[in-house]
Image (cartoon, rainbow, N blue to C red; front, side, top):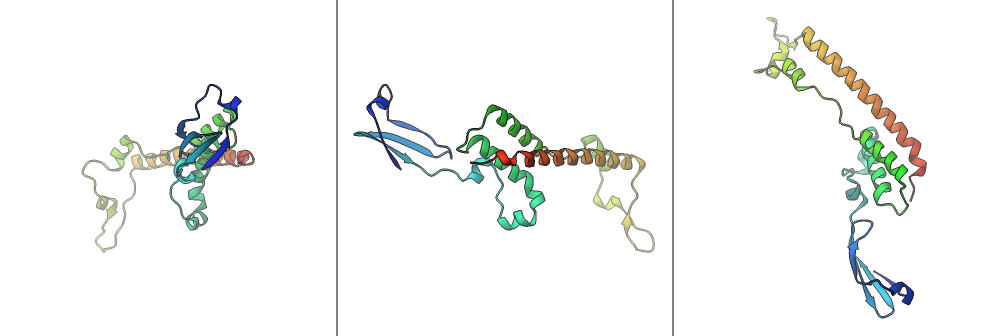
Length: 180
């Protein structure tokens, strides 16, 4: 709750009755009380909820920092674009949105056609193993088509990892401008 003096020049042509949302998505009610304006603030959302950051314990972040880095960077960018008390210019917003898109790029997967070759209709996990007469079980060697698919996937995965690595470097480069 806050109380502000309402000077006559501030009151001209505007209503002091107001309801809206604050910076942390909280309800804000404003109403006149003699020469003051009274503002009542509801409970806002946590920064974690506002920015879409998954729920982590600090232990998880410390132990799995690499796995948490992109989520933390994206949450920080979203906070500084939309909820910080500091102004985010259009140029910064464009840069931040580009970084968010790059840091949230989904990892590559096998295509439907590739999965049709790797796991054809009727395939079961047991099909991946050979059971020689001596009783030892071992993985079946991949076919030439499967080897080609795995090699293409590794290339896509390598290119993806390089893009993520570069996006992380670009995020680190702008950290000095992320302050509130």
